[in-house]
Amino acid sequence: AAVQIADLGFSGPVVERVVPGDGRLGLGKLMATVTPGGFGGPFELELIGQAIEDEGYEPAIRRSLEHLQGLLAHRSSSSSGGPDPAPA
Image 1: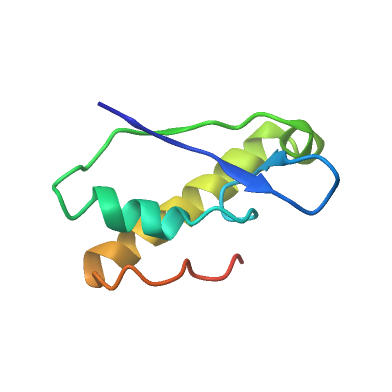
Image 2 (image 1 turned 90 degrees about the vertical axis):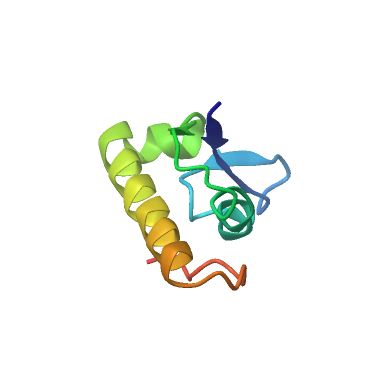
């Protein structure tokens, strides 16, 4: 099994895929749901869309990994299931 990670921005007339952490989906809540049950991966990043292409894949991947690693670290030290940390 794998968990696919993506994020969505709702700021325009069309819902758009964005770098995980930049959007409005509750990725912290997702992590809080799957990790306490013992799921340790794999997590699969789904990086598609104009915002990703505009930023460039390498920086988008780097930022996505940093955000998700922060969520995983936060979840391992706290099981509160609270809101996601603010994007950097």
